[in-house]
Image (cartoon, rainbow, N blue to C red; front, side, top):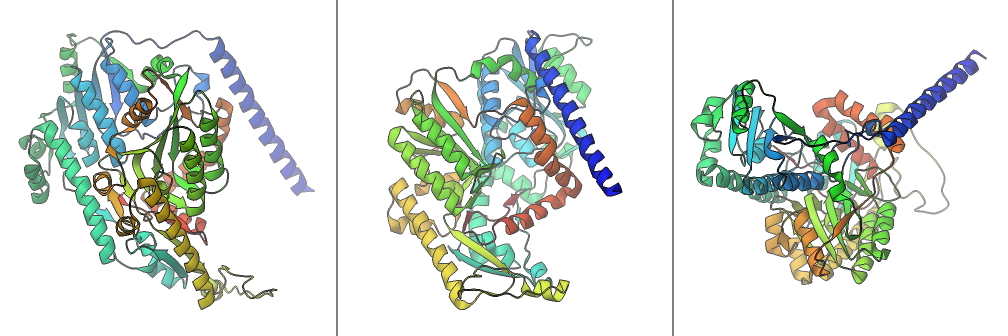
Length: 584
């Protein structure tokens, strides 16, 4: 009876809390609707940007943003690009103050961000970058600024790139877990952490090749902005010349060493303000709120569909997952909308389920019969991410996009010895046919069963290559030679014919508009933003849970995610790049 009352009152309390939350949210929504407050950008403004701000493909709403008209959430990458371009023509914005403490974004994302800053500066406006400790990716973005300042006692990381892989084979052996692995493509290194203790020669070759391309692009961009040749920059890194803030200033990587107050004084001087005047700093969120009407989708002619995250089957509403059922609906909606004249498919994905990739590919192929489909690649568009891209009329990638990885694999673990010897658990059962328990993790597979799985992997790989042959108009021999699971940079992919052009989201949209002769157009974005209450409930659910786990595990979160993915892909044929391409 006591147990009953405990459960009853706990449930009652939960209902009260949820009800109260819903009530206050409703009040906030009503208040927001009745409020006439608008964010107005005053003259002599300075837009504040931070390299540490993680830029998702699509806008990430603040769960409680409906309670305040002044907080529309965190803009997505395309939002930021449009806002910077808008600021370049906005008389109320005189310059940008770029804070460079850390960098949470991938290589291609930073490239698009940096390109927008370059256009801003080319419009005759100034950028001041300042940081206490700059990472290499922070400095990559900051180097475009008119003035780059570093804290006198701070530091600048300029030591070159490295890529590290975590191998789990030894751990699995200690646990007596046998990862039964099937794959196609000699460069398909996604399963290496389970079957090797170090990189295979093939993986070392491909990693060195694309890492060198990424590094060359890094040095080239910095060299262009800082007027230092790339050979000299490479020598600085190779010699370990940049070990302090003084070194960074001595070798002209920064324009000077300043404290925060000194940078503020210089910005005031640039704005013709006195020492006591307050600088009109404009946050990115406020600038977004003030200009959101410019990007509304009235009379939209171009559909921009964001596809970010792992590719999975089913119908998931998670913002960082590309679920086949959901994306089939989104693509079909854009295809059947008579006002939509072209589709831009923005892919930022390391791949995932091969079957889900095939389903999305099919829907995009149907769309292509009705209207042009242009793909814009983000940080990754590899393996399954390339599978869903290869059929496009035109493909755009950044120089430092990682793509290709045309190969597949499957993992079916044998946990029998782990359960028996480590946990004391055994299994037994009966079956009505010889292969009724095919794929069970409680015993090793037979040779015949292994042949079944490998045949499935071989068939999927063959279909994948056929999609590329037909989509890219390449011969089977060429595709076979550049497939094999090998990862390529955007520059390499263009040379090989896997992509058409080097460029970002705006370039892809402009291409789509040109294909349908749209002189003027609006962009309609998919998936459409969710309602405020739904965002709050989701934040209090899965997203909050993930954030808590990430905060608790810290640097070990990547290993947790790796183990989690192994569990999720059990028995499914995967088209995915290596577990974690970690580049620092």
